[in-house]
Length: 107
Image (cartoon, rainbow, N blue to C red; front, top):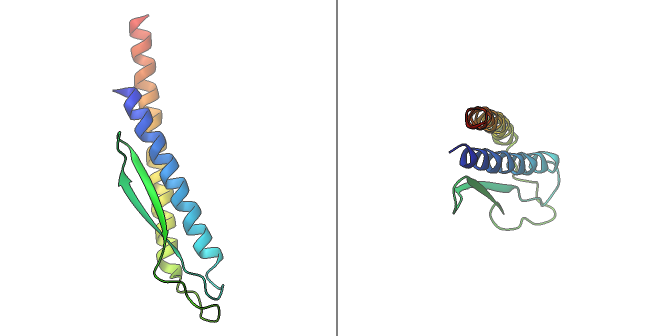
């Protein structure tokens, strides 16, 4: 059980880190003409855990049109990704403690 919890927690850390990178990229390019923001989509992994897919939003904008990045959405998403990262870190910590206890009982 605790090994799968470690794996799930690790996949969550990776997914939230990747999503936060995407949000940071969108925020950094908010004033770039023609920039189309990235869209993050979390999915359940085939073997458990979570994966993240990143795609571009809509069609490519012309080089002269302003970016359609919504800064409010990106900031809220960033807060959610940080909270998800912290939550998955706690899952890993708890799984590590359980595994350590099991090893101590076995020894």
